Length: 365
Ligand SMILES: C[S@@+](CC[C@H](N)C(=O)[O-])C[C@H]1O[C@@H](n2cnc3c(N)ncnc32)[C@H](O)[C@@H]1O
Image (spheres, helix red, strand yellow):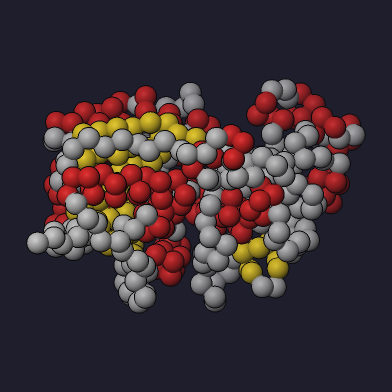
């Protein structure tokens, strides 16, 4: 008699718009639910992931409530990508340990202790690896019987067209599990041109009629002149003196060179932050059109599919909110690689795995 295939089912805490959930689904993992306190995640999560979205503060989520989200008999995955702002390198030197988001890793720990899911995964900025809260989390997982692996990984190696490093953790009660290596060599990294080079052009501050998200933020006259003077990969040092800001005249160093700048066509993009629609906030100028990248371009550079839906038809396209949701997401292609490693691990221990597909019905609530 052949064994019945096992189902792998994930609950995604801090699910955002579903970057991580989408990647897990692409790997064949069923996504049982997402939890996030931001109401702006409701529409994109339910529409794209087609799984229930719980608009909840993870701190208030009980062990019993979480346990009830997984289907009976499935190998349970708990994903807990707590917000990375307290650990971001932009915050180096600032004592962030008193901030409200800091203890959220401990909330993941509380829920792991209470439910003992077979698999745990987490993604965050690399700097989290040296923090006491992360080290305590790993130590506790090991005490609970988990095999744990974590590593800082470079996203272009996973097919993400973007320079981005992230810490990935995987842990299993079933046996040894490892964070997968990216399979692409530098010569095969996906470039800006390959993913957004064919999108229809849009003007400064305009939106494409066929896609409301393919909209660029408006540059004022001064910044329009600045971007006209910018070359892909160049810096504001090429501009005429009168276009430079006082901070530019004084500043030196790589960080300051990478603002008010254009992306390069034939490389992965810079890290897509929550402000990637803003020319002054990084190397976020389009390589040849005189405008910052659009929200759609930012999402594609995060490796979201071109038709991923972020905003309900009747809602306004808000740069601040959508920029935050897109910039904070786990790149789906990185999540897919982690998902595949989980599927392979479960298959090695338990035998055949039932491949899940996205549900056809959009559950409400
Ligand atoms: C790094 S983002 C998660 C990205 C998401 N995993 C994805 O792949 O798209 C962190 C998320 O945590 C949410 N968040 C912050 N504090 C929270 C809390 N106390 N309870 C629930 N969600 C919270 C934020 O709204 C944000 O969407």
